[in-house]
Structures are given as C-alpha cells and as structure tokens.
Image 1 (cartoon, one colour):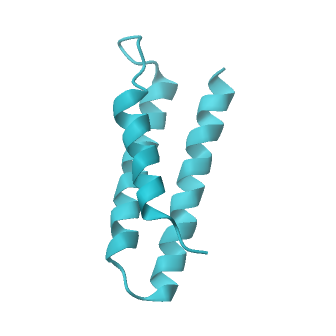
Image 2 (image 1 turned 45 degrees about the vertical axis):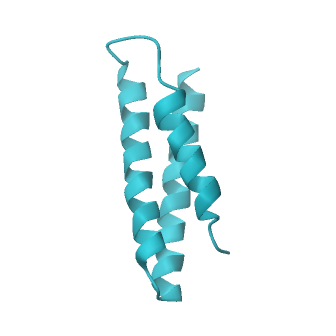
Image 3 (image 1 turned 90 degrees about the vertical axis):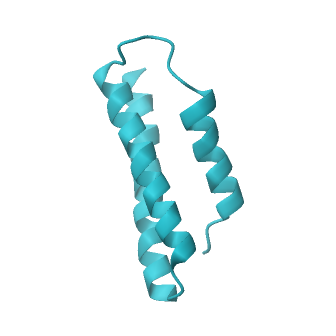
Length: 78
C-alpha cells in the first residue's frame, strides 16, 4: 500500500502548526509526541525520495509505526 503524501503532509502540518499545546512548558508526554512528529516528517521525506519499492515499503512501515506511537502516547496521556 502506498502512502498518500499530500494527505500525510497535511496531517503533519496540522499537528505541528495548528494543534499546538496551550500549556508551557510542555509536559514530557507532549515533548515526546512532538519528537515523534519530527521523526515522521523525516521518514515521509525519505519515502518521497526513494524509488525502490522495497525501500518504500520499509520506510512506510516505520512511518506508520511512528504515527501509531504518536496516537498511543496522546491517548495514554488523557
């Protein structure tokens, strides 16, 4: 399955720039969640650059795991 790059970039943009936490300093779980978003951005950039289907599949898997971890972290904090 291929990632929809436009959709994924929009999601990351919204999470990073529009859904900023209001409390400062950020609690540890928020800092960790935002670090995961940064990792996801790097993985999505790598995915867009790669031509090999095997490399794309590996990066896609790592990207999805990172996003799942992001949501689990936020869910566990509530």
